[in-house]
Amino acid sequence: MTDPTFKPAIVPLRTDTLADLPSAVSCPTYDRAALTPGIVHIGLGNFHRAHQAWYLHRLMQTGAALDWAIVGAGVRAYDENQRLKLAEQDYLTTLVELDPAGTSAEVIGSMIDYVPVQPGNRPLIERMAQADIRIVALTVTEGGYYIDPTTKGFDTNHPDIRHDAANPDGPTTAFGAMVAALKLRRDNGVGSFTGLSCDNLQGNGAILRQTVVSLARLSDPALADWIEHTCSFPSSMVDCIVPATGPKEVELARSLGIDDAAPVTHENYRQWVLEDDFCAGRPDWDNVGATFTDNVHDFEAMKLRILNGGHQIIANPGEVLAVATIADCMAHEKIRALFNRIALDEIVPHVKPVTGTTPEAYVDLIARRFANPRIIDTTRRVAFDGSSRHPGFVIPTIRDGIEAGTPIDGLALAEAAWARMCEGTREDGSQIEQNDPFWLNLQTTAKAAKSDPLVWLEQRQFYGGLADHPGFSAAFSKWLRLIWSDGMETAIDVYLEG
Image (tube, rainbow, N blue to C red; front, side):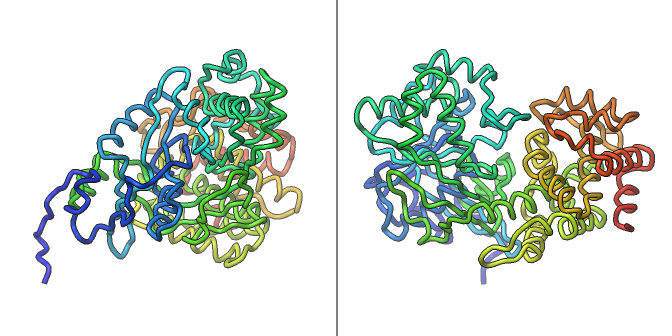
């Protein structure tokens, strides 16, 4: 019988200590010294390590894809801290799965290097320019692609873009570094690589193509043409709930016998759907559960509208009501009912079924995933960057509802909850700290909207012409006034009573 008081010895995570880890911890069975690189991944945070790096690791465990190892990269100064942490442990990562039925851990070894982070990004440019790199992948957040919020085209006026256009050999952005590397590859006869976005953007491949090609065109039109005709930019849909790492996560890994400075916790679910368009080859990720399809759009629409949109529907009321985590939001009777009602009545009518599931079944799956009490995913983290997430995940469904004549009352309530949250205080009087790149502007507008709700909808960079739609503007105004006069829970009750 297992002694419940037994605590395993804590082993520092390195290649030479893998054999000393507890037997319950799954470790690489492949020879990491024999791995050679094939992928540079920019933005190497928790999500990438729990998702794309895991799929590659699982493929390597079968003896395949040993020439596709990952080289990590970043373009911001804080990425250097991550590089140093991972270098100390030979770029190994502990993944801790938080299943309601129990906790398990595995160590993945698909990453073998991390490019030094330097001003001008020369090491990154030179690494991507080498012939062994055939895929450059990115997770840089959905708000990081320099999209003009009004036109949805490329934002040529952003200071970062103006800098990179004027200094193509010393760029500050990941995309400028990609352009510079592709120029070297063209000039040296190396050939192109595939650009693979792994961010939560519908049509993320087309968006990445737009960003890279448009940036190149500002300084070298001929290079832009070459990139457009030789590179590929497949769309993809990624899904796995991965909380941020803090002291609790580090301690959790230690409780399992692993001293990892940067462990990753994750839920017991993953999905990866990709368009099969790779100009320089790819790993056979489909052999370990990824899906290659020509129909990425319907998969990503289901996920972005229901999961990502659902996150915003519950996180904004949760923040106003001082509910700490997403699981706690789903344990809150009114917030859970709000999610279910809006998802089924107002989102599902605009989502097509995909192979293996229906929109209604997917709502049920997402509700269970959100409710997983082992996932300490903070309401604050999920509510972050609403200025990107609402236009990306919620507002498109409002437009669809108006066009189709289906209900939008709950979605108007969700937008009113966002406006209420951005005012910056909770109903218990506590302060909501800055939680958006445009927080100060949002807060100023939210304060004004307390007495004149339509001021919020005049942020046309988010809402476009929705401010002029009488049904939506009236519903939004009704809900925001009610939230301020009677409270968030009362507004939810009124919506649920229909």
